[in-house]
Length: 160
Ligand code: ZN
Image (cartoon, rainbow, N blue to C red; front, side, top):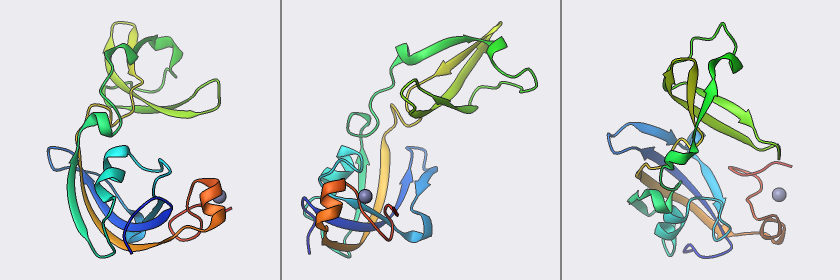
């Protein structure tokens, strides 16, 4: 069965940056998503279109088709006093913040200048080319409920 809209695709993947470091990989060897429902980044979804069970693909996805370009204006200056005094703030540290709408975001410390901390609110993978190695392990029809919810149920997907 080949991959098209409203198919549930199971796969193993490894994601590396341009230096060859592993950024992410599928847990217990499996991950499932609903094709055509914006469950995954656009560049990867496009690369998988029309592929079949057992296919292995390697694809490099540019930032514009992954998590976007890095936006310098999304770096905020926050007084050091807003952080707990007992934490040694260092560039590269990441914190979770909650936006007013309740959404959880990850921010990264990009520097410390005097009494200020520079917080980068871009997605941690913004501006990065993502190199995926994917093995497609299964392709099946989505159920009506999965199509309605816009995500996969069961193995590799949502349990609710
Ligand atoms: Zn659901």
